Amino acid sequence: MPCTTLLVGKNATNDNSLIIARTDDGHFDVKKIIVVNPKDQPKIYKSKIGHLEIELKEKPFRYTSCPSVDLKNGIWAATGINEKNVGMTATETTTSNPRVLGLDPYVRYEKAKKKGEKDKPGGLGEEDFVVLVLPYIKTAREGVLRLGELLTKYGTYESNGIAFNDENEIWWFETIGGHHWMARKVEDDEYVVMPNQFGLDKFDFSDAYKEKKANLCSSDLKEFVESNFLNTSFDESNFNPRLAFGSHTDQDHVYNTPRGWYMCRYFNPRTFVWDGENAYYTPESDDIPWSLKPEHKITIEDIKYILSSYYQGTIYNPYGRGDSPKKGMYRPIGINRTDVTGILQIRPNKDDNIKGIEWISFASNAFNVSVPLYSNVSKMPSYLSSVNKNVSLDNLYWSTRVLQALADSHYSTSIMSIERYQNKVMNGVRELLYKYDKLMEEKGKYDLMEEANQKIVDFVKAETDSIISTVLLNASEHMKNGYNRFDN
Image 1 (cartoon, rainbow, N blue to C red):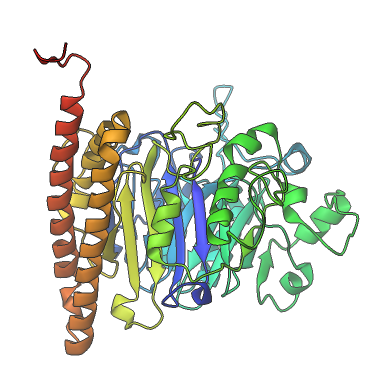
Image 2 (cartoon, one colour):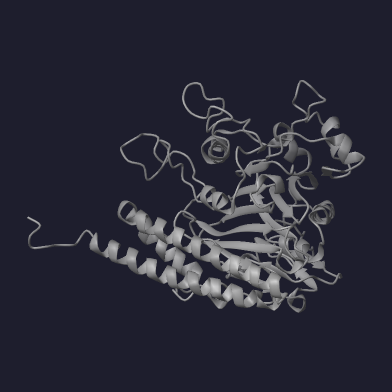
């Protein structure tokens, strides 16, 4: 899935939350959010793409999940928080190169060619990771180690990046070829941008092989690099994983790097020159930093905005005025085919019951709203969880899909209404979140979380129904077959 990931350390956020966020950009896949209770977790997991069967012996924790409604290609759980307040988002599809894949090829499913022979199972992939990892981990670090063990044993058929967070740490995990991997802890005062490329630009093998404080990797990764001449840096002590394992193709320069450029430009507008002839980094730079210290503390609203963005304020904005030849030349973050966006917020200063907040959006972020949900519950409101393949305004997924299509087609006359809707909803859900946080903390009645989720969703539904009516009327008034007898 071609997605966009943003990670923010606890000292880089306004309230010391640890946040991992990702847009899941498929091809208009229908999504929902549910809670998977322990009794519903499979004891034998069967993958669709890799054709693997894996026995799950451990007792699972309850967790939230954003699966595909159509299960023909698997669950694709995408994003979730478990009852131990550990978040996971999987995955950011990344890139590699022939030097790596020639040495450690992807593990792909092979159907038997002759009668009597057995099919050869493939490895694991985005379809599988959340279901196999999130229900069984108590910390973000445990998530890295469990996923690493699974990849070493079964391999993978694709290149991916996976994020984990808990109340103390954020970890970023990247696959390397079919069986290798590395992971780094995100610095508390930094944020990380990941736009569909291998991201890590530094790694400490000494730490990974000894103390393992902030670096973890597959057991033979250093030897794999050294024996196969994968380090392309002249300074061999300064290992750059992005150069060794990733790519910097022409496609990257229109599809991937511009998104990293725009995110860093937003959070660090004065740190570097981003525009013009003297720009330090451009949309096509291969060395845009993986992580930076932001110029101000980052909020949920900042994260929602940047994951909704389409190069506003630049000549690349597809909705921009004029006839600039560069309009729409780069792939935006807030793209039309986003399925679901999860902003997973772990709040260390809150009671364990309400530490986890999962902000969920469906469809294109440019026109939608983000809904905060207490994650430590046994079910989700039906407006978010009861979704099928038929278009219906009875759920948020299809309502937002309808809204985005109407608003995009009439952008100039509808964007003001969309922005008012987005502001009103964010104001309202913030008010409800503050109200229920305070109520539960003062009275210790944490069984109010499902009530709170329902109140939040009821408010969002009312405002979403209203904006659809507004934008539909606007679109109807501007149809090409309109006519008024006084037009001429």
